[in-house]
Image (tube, rainbow, N blue to C red; front, side, top):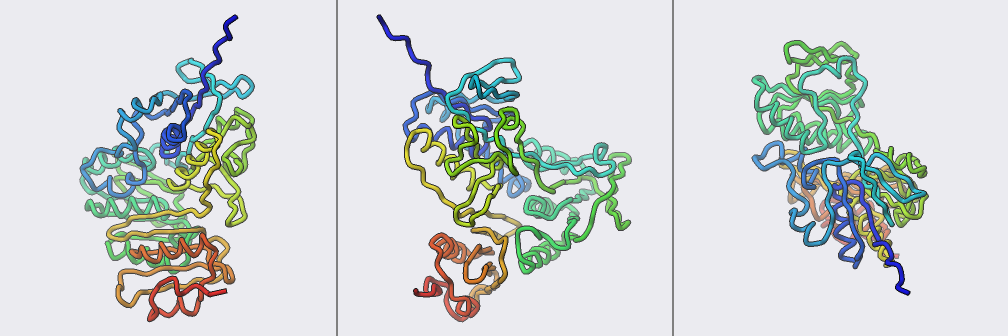
Length: 417
């Protein structure tokens, strides 16, 4: 008697941004022979997102440079399904349901659902003219189109985080009159030291962007497609375009339907496995215990999504994963490149180092006692590379030598034990 044919192993990936796309191709690289379904609500072929708030707004390039050409998915036998949305997950039956009514069975399910921008509950926000967030190619194109059609080109950016500042820099370089309104007492207050906040404040002021801290937007009045942004202190700012960059909501609705553990994101273990053995989560949507910093983290970065994609691909293919516990980030504003490695939260000492031979370069080093936590490097790749090495290897840095800019920045700064 012939044996019944076993059903084909299937990995369904929900979300086709950096994490989801790289996972699909990493699975093939690791030798996965089953079916791969990569599903995304966006109708566009998956594209790079970081440039949307940076060079895209001041370039003639089509919105969203492709992560992979369409032919690459066909060659790798990856079933790319765009313009459809997963609306339900049934872990008991191992099925997902799409908004087109179809149901699909999985062996492994990976949630790469990301996050969506917050629209704060400001009076009048729903009826504001030309108000945008900036997370997708559609957002970037809408901002560019509005900018090209408005006459006075007055832009108010609500939020002085990295996305808001990058958008402000890009639009200013296009000739916009830009105002940034930040609720906290300084820019980037949650992620950098005051020295770095002051630097970016001066940078934008020098480029004729009006930056105001401690501004809580309370109302937006709109008349004839012109907005008036009003703060709680009574100050008012006219705007033809409003860009909102005040944070994100994590997309956990599918995980909640599946009954997965949620804690500031979808809780995952070192292998990015959720509370259900057949379901994984990667990227912005998940929270994971970081072994280097010894605390739970939810990281919003391309690097984190790519690293986690490699881990899951290895685990699914029964291979030992390589885990990188040190996150890194970057930001481009005007001619400034900021590279960041590590996490500064919990620092009790900051060293700001200016290089004698290059006044345009400096770095900020964050310590907790003798432990180097993170480094912010402005136009200074060497500081970023050395900082990464010191943090990864848990090397102790001689702080006195680090503070002495007459000494070369090198591995000689390490305290020999």
